[in-house]
Image 1 (cartoon, rainbow, N blue to C red):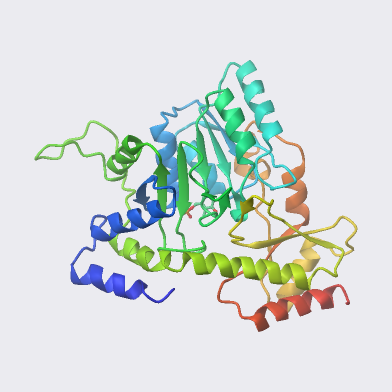
Image 2: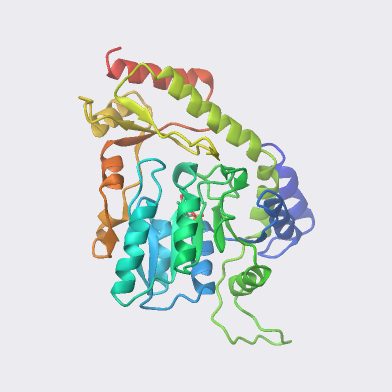
Length: 364
Ligand SMILES: *Cc1c(COP(=O)(O)O)cnc(C)c1O
């Protein structure tokens, strides 16, 4: 926590706003809007529910197809299944690890030739790294397919000085406990179009019509953020900049201190992009005699947790039969890539312990 969260929580308690309604929710939405090009924001219960709402608001129907990055966490794709639609997975490019524009265009034209135009494209900014937005937006516009930006891991990341999540029809943030800032659990849906966000808030609060009694002409959801969670968010948003700076410092520290090991490479940001480096990720070169599992186990023996990169969706048992447009990039990253400990509360001596252990592993 940053320090001021408990004051906001106390305020919520004192005013007795212990519900999924209350002033801290709209205050938190305003704060998020301030850092997101003044877009309209709906604070919701999770990033997953925000993606579900985005799909509902784009009128995705059972049997429709939705394109999604394959290299991601399952929550990017699962809401497609909630609707009874079919995810179509698209592989990554080497440069950003995110959706490859060439593969995207291939997927769109192939689906159209299959008599099924995709209803939406979910692009993910994995590990906080901005995707190839210009190219992807151009392609999506050419075919008039709306974009949902899954920026769950990318709050504080920028593309030409513009916050990620503001390039598509919808953007999604997550405030789950593992993200760069947290409300314990929570998320946000954002859009330039206020009518879409108003509708999202309506659907997220059980879709109650205006009437003195409880009347419903739509299926609603219980997806609104709790006022207590929003009060935590008000404290957390104050330290977002500091957290991003620290994540970037940690990434830079690892990069400099591990530069002498030729078998390790890092995911680098392009000049006009700024990643929040939510996690510092490495790839072991094909020439490395130590594979990713040997690396992980050695670190684990030394009480340091190192995790494999996300396992691509097209390789997941649940999604193995989904249509996929694959070039081998995400599978290769999964086979050779790892996340290093990246917590913002790590001290220099913690980072040095990780680095020393990696040096031992390579006997340097
Ligand atoms: C965390 C995450 C989500 C889901 O967010 P929740 O708030 O945990 O539901 C979606 N996509 C990605 C890429 C994530 O990392």
